[in-house]
Length: 139
Length: 139
DNA sequence: ATGTTTTTTGCAACATAGTTGCATTTTCTA
DNA sequence: TAGAAAATGCAACTATGTTGCAAAAAACAT
Image (cartoon, rainbow over all chains, first blue to last red; front, side):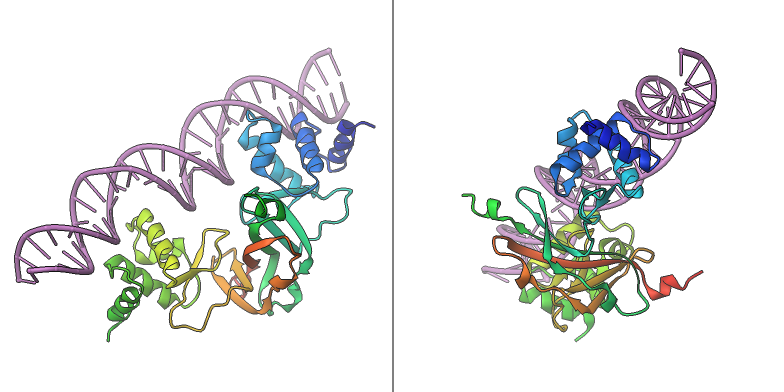
């Protein structure tokens, strides 16, 4: 089963049409192996990619539970949910302001249960910003 | 000493001109008593308020250390820093998606020290979203 | 208090991010 | 493979944030 067929299967399992656009999008997200931004996706998919179609498909893939947006505050960072070790929501994400990459820091987690009663929590994010080791050591 | 004079003094201490715009802006932020968004500020200051001037002044007031943006990820929530109990950065903020108000949840704090070495941390945020008690109980 | 200098304001224009509607194309189904 | 259903790509629009500059306001020296 080649790569194209894998994503075809994933889409079919969620009752989504296996369009070329969706297959290419999933392939790029999966190959990145880390949460990837819309802008980086645009670059990988080709600069002539339609912005609207990308927005709509990323939203649709999130709704279907195939991918996940781990940083809905900014412009979004998307990661595969399917078939990988669960990308649990409540660890820290570190965004490098230089290279724009997002790192998962599993050493720091949040405990929603300590939020006072009365608040109806829908989402919970831990985010740090700064420069990663690679960017910090550049001259 | 009336209210206007108080803000005049605060501005002068930071070597900022005590303009009507800045005094009104500080008054609204102070009266809110909680972190207030740019949009809410615009409403309070009057819909004919210039967007550019508001952006520039909020930035300037932050730079001067008079106010603080507790959510620089989204569109920003501003709170008085001066003369109040310190608004420490590392507790959770809860944003109500219905009324757009931001609540400080001091029960949950983050521990930056657990971030692995190599990462050069500049900022650190904890954010939850959902509905607050008032909005949750509305029909 | 008044005139001069400096800073701030308000406007026009621009840039980026995200959304909506719709005709055309692609994918699905029988 | 033909018709039905869904997705794509385009134009246009909204919201958010930024830059440059002339006019107005504030600060300052006299």
